[in-house]
Image (tube, rainbow, N blue to C red):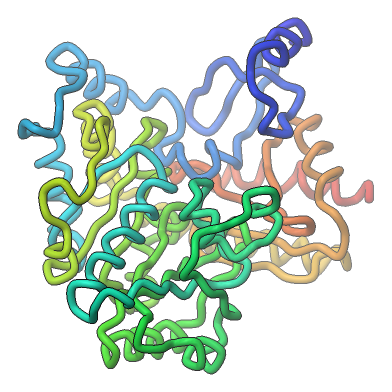
Length: 394
């Protein structure tokens, strides 16, 4: 183990505070390190591995596609990207899809599209974007500017102009910030990195009306909370509020890198050939992975599993809250859940890892739970038992 870590430190750039384990393989909702120790994985690549590990259909279909075509330019049509787009469009309020490789790229695409739309419809000065405090939208210069957390922006000034930040779930704060130069409002229906904070349904409904009145593009960043994580295919469906644009990634590829930006027809029309592109966007292997994930969510009962297991998981967390004063609040929907503590979670996360449970923080004092969407009650109980034992030590 230590030999691998030392080799990695010599050649990999120091941009992560990595845990001192080297993961080698996975199966279902478990992973093993290179010394053979087994862990229950409630991280899933940070809400990525929707189908867990070693899903037979996932492996089979990607392998079959690899034997056909691993990549070609978007100057040509590709069947997997067309098929995946049809599934996404037929099961959403959107009409068109743009593919990229990550969540940050998907949000970047949404930002560019909204600026194009604003200038086209309202004039050259319509490029300002309102985003939420405690939000997280990515690590590119545009998306880190959109992120409403200073800690991610330190050292990168000057940031991009035209972004402003308002309190999440505070409609009055938002309404005051809107002006004739506002082209878009971007919201995570459930803030992930910011601490698992869900939006209020009435708030999103008011924001939708505000955007309609002023012809402002409403963008939902569902990179972490979308693709079945809430028990609905899209998080917006949980709140019954339809955005104009949505950004997706993480769970969409089930572990294969893919991002997507979906838009309604009127907003999608703002892009013309040459306005935006991605060499690997719509890659046939990535789109094949996406097809497997979506078909299993939609037609093999995984969305229903998320609803049932999410409810059960949350009930178990509430039981822990009743037992431990250190737990201030339990939040979230489906299998994107969090518990806020009155202390730092770092030592608790590390101790759980020692006890073979992988969890992670969402800020200083929130523990986040985003396991594979295939998890069952027995596995939830196993994780809760470990967490209970660890909390009892603090």
